[in-house]
Image 1 (tube, helix red, strand yellow):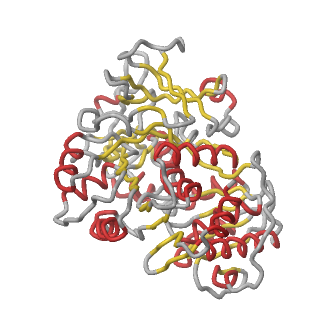
Image 2 (cartoon, rainbow, N blue to C red):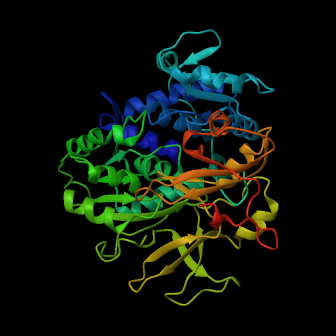
Image 3 (cartoon, helix red, strand yellow):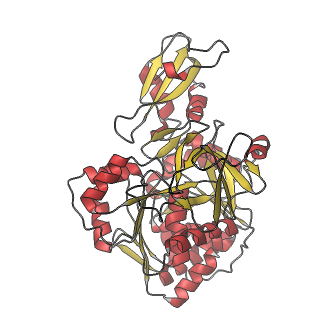
Length: 499
């Protein structure tokens, strides 16, 4: 599968460029060589089926290398958002019982506290030239002589742990096997007819299911060239570079989020994007104004994609006229079945709203240690997503909301209950509810916390408390203090009075 695909690409077109990043170009042969050396190191550490390698890296060739080394050695890869704080990292590392943690050199000190607190030994690998006792660097591994490593994993081996936000406060672990991930790779590549002649520009995080499936998995299945946008800060700082890369590389496939497309449309920069076969939008609903503004400026029609952590890519609007159906995510891609059901789980009539239900071989089987929830959402090989939508007159799926409310922050789905669980730990907080405020523009919702405290407490104190425990995009930008929270006669908190 993934390891075998890498080997086949390295043998059939060894000197073709596989990955570009900054000024670095890696051929398929060079990538295969690096993967083999890292996998050899993992084997020497005792990494095997059942071992977990945490990957806390931004979009770099080392991310791809480590992921594939896991595929070769039989390890399970845990991709982690590099913005996560100690508490968030501890939860993931402990639940997955990591054996190896791969981090960038400049963030090693930030993560060391979490690693040292674990009750078992953990090997640290640094993605850089680095020399310190007890830490291995990639530059050392790449200098090794022997590269080839036997492929240890089979299709049923767990390939990746991912975490999905949901109706409970803490993220839920999803396990996906090699077979499941490869099925997604095949579904995407065949639906978009991706080949070795394509170029994918990746500007979305590879640790997220959107970038993982549509950039990494699709790249490896198709043999396309993958260009990684170096983005250590907000996209607005890299918009010009993104447009330059799209034009210069003649990229054919570009997955992004509406927030990014709006920034590109608002920028004063021009670019020839005529090489793009598909400019895909996902993460949050695409506003018609963004669609029209981007199309008018660059002559490229955006097409929406729908996916989820549990199943990867589900639907793409590649067959409908996007001018008339820009609000639709289209129909299910190859290898995926989608239906809409009512509260009794009966299929609804065309045009009626219903819950989106997915069936595909790329789908996970369950959430880790969530028996009650699993019984509700995984049934008969189907996943009941909690997303609500309807099929329009052209047969395209239009999403209108969820059973569980999220806060959309610049392309990130934020679960308010996760933030509430953090804030309630503050010594002075007695009650808390977190809500999303209406966006100041099309995509920038903000997070607001409403708290009841036992004695005087400042807004900055609550925000600082959150910053030390949550990724930046989850931190409330506003805190309101109340003597009590508004409730219904039955005691339910009335959030409509808090926004």
